[in-house]
Image (cartoon, rainbow, N blue to C red; front, side, top):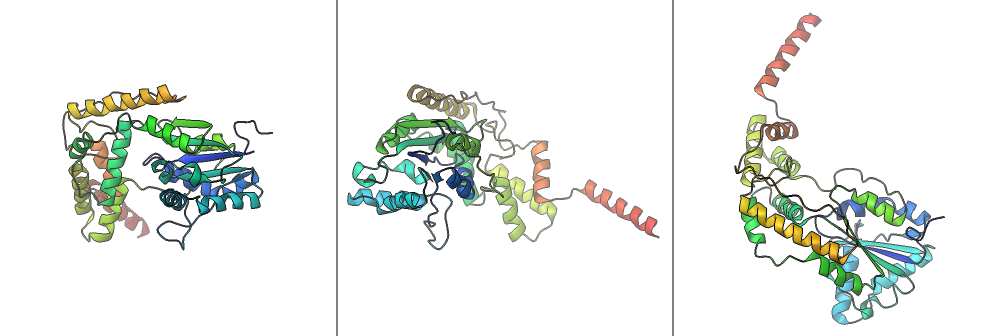
Length: 336
C-alpha cells in the first residue's frame, strides 16, 4: 500500500517546467511510462503537439496555451476539463501534467473551473543554480544558430541587464498559489537525477528515455559539418575547434574558466542570492553554489578537450593514420 506522499488518490501533480532544467527528459519518461503510471492510478494525458497537431507531444505545451487563451477570454479552459474527464474515464485517481508553459501563466479560478476540484494539487519545480542555468541557456541559443553568434562573455554582459534575481522563488510561489497548490516542491537537479526525483514523487519507476533528448553543442556542430562540409577530417576538426573557440565555451568542460573574474563573480553572486531565496521560501535542500574558478585565459581549449573533439568528429590524427597503415601492411604480409 502506497503512503500518502506517493498515493495517486485525489492528487494532481503539476510539473511546472523551467527552461533548461531537464523538462524534456522528464516529459519523455512520463510519456514512455504512461502505461505504468495508469496501472498505479496516475493519468498522464497524451495531447497533440502544439506546432503540429498531427503528431503527439511528450509534454503539455498545447494545454498551457489553451489555458492562457481561456484566461484572456475569462472563461473555463475546455481542454483542462476534457483532461479531467479522460482521467475519470480511465479510472485514474491521480493526474500528472507537465509543461514549461505552466510557469508563464497564473490561471484564475475561472480558468481552472471545476477541472481540479477534489484534487490535492501539488506543483513541482526542478531548478538549477542561476550560473549553471545561464550557461545552459547560452548553449541552447548557440545550438539553434550552429555556433554562429556572440561569444559567451558578450552573452553574460547581456544577462547583467536582466531583472532575474531574486526571480525563481516569488514566481514559483505565485504560480503555485494560482494553481491552488496545497504543496509546492522545489528540487535541484544538480547532483540529482530529474527522472528519479519525479519517480519518487509519483511512486512509480519511470523508464529511462531512449536516445538523445537534447544533443550537446559539440554534437550539433559536428553533425552540421558532417552534413555540409565535404572537406577531410582535419578540416572538420579545425572548423569545430573554431566554433567552440568563437563561442568561448565548450560543453566538454562546463565551467567558467573562460570568463573574466568580474563576470564570474557576478554570476556567483546572483546564484547565491537565488539559492538563499529558495531556502527561505521553500523546503529547498539544493547544494549551495560553488565559487567558479577562472583560468584567466580566454579562447583557449585544453588538450583533453581537443582530443574529445577529435573523437566526436571521428577525425584521424596523422599518428593514428600511420598506425593504421602499418597494421594494414602487417595483415597483408600475413595473408600472403
